[in-house]
Length: 58
Image 1 (cartoon, rainbow, N blue to C red):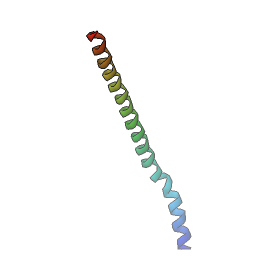
Image 2 (cartoon, rainbow, N blue to C red):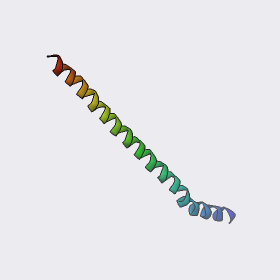
Image 3 (cartoon, helix red, strand yellow):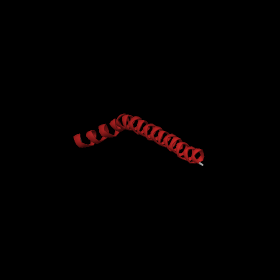
Image 4 (spheres, one colour):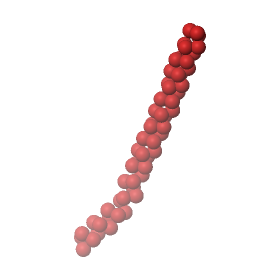
């Protein structure tokens, strides 16, 4: 009977432990999204410098 009570308690505790994981996952997704945006911005800056240098040298 005690084992059954422990299992019931574990089931009740799960939603509380899921919330921090959801918050961590959200934070990770936002961080990755920001990194991808920064990488795209840097690529555009590099491409602009590269192509403008070629255009000015002609």
